[in-house]
Image (tube, rainbow, N blue to C red; front, side, top):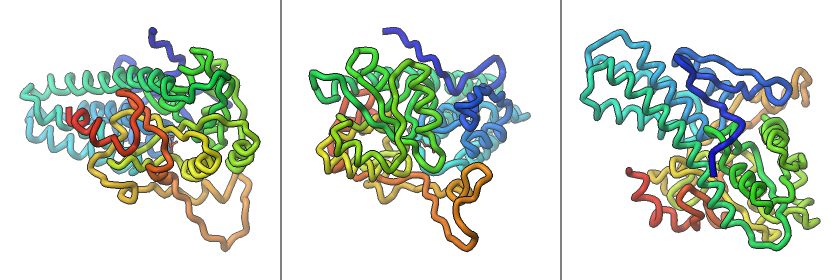
Length: 353
Ligand code: MRU
């Protein structure tokens, strides 16, 4: 099966990074050109590029852009500069571990290389491009493994997803939406139910846009409708992405994912997480150790220019929550669908490669 996703949110073009500006979709399809590490870090912070694997790919290019800005030929000075670039990128968003994974991979490559600085810069670009193309392939594999893990019903499936874990959130194709794309390709999908995903509305703005692009039937729900839909027998399975998975399988994903997992359990509907190995953080024993990003309150007290509540109200705006492993039927990776409790046994040795 050839790779043919129609959406590439992060691309290297001649001497710059091209990003689909995800803050403008679905009303405007706009591509932003990035030529410096600072611009790239800003694009991650402001969510022009978002979604764990896409952030990782973008950060890898950010490392190269930062490396390119260095004027020195001295290896020690260059590595010192690269550490500062890494620091700038690490400070953008705390939860998605793919960001740190990609930065560390680029840094390790630089430390291990004996090449002259000019050559090393070129090697860093090649390493970033490899992270980009690998992620695309990984998503395709996740999609196909996900197909095998879905309930083997004779009828076509109705799958609920939360947030956007699609092509836009990866190098292309998607993780959760990759499973959905594969199910659609194999005629095993009836339709997708997309939670709107307050407050940033990634489900309403991005997941529905991707589905429409791909010709996949999609129904948009507000976040408080999932229980009702499950009770009415409208949902056969839930598939979501992940931002960081602890060694025991506890999974951080977009805020609201945990409540979807709880209600899926209450209705005996299988709840799957689809994510690459690079999203698993084996250094963390369980989900309580996952850092949860808190974003600006303006995301919840206003819609556009309209304020939703009076002055004097306090706000809490966590961007992610943690779904305990016991609510997850399987974690679908590029190496297959794995029970959360088996992650360490089956994947830890691969993560060190
Ligand atoms: O805040 P976002 O939009 O970056 O959050 C994205 C998610 O929570 C996704 O579900 C997750 O990153 C997986 S993307 C394949």
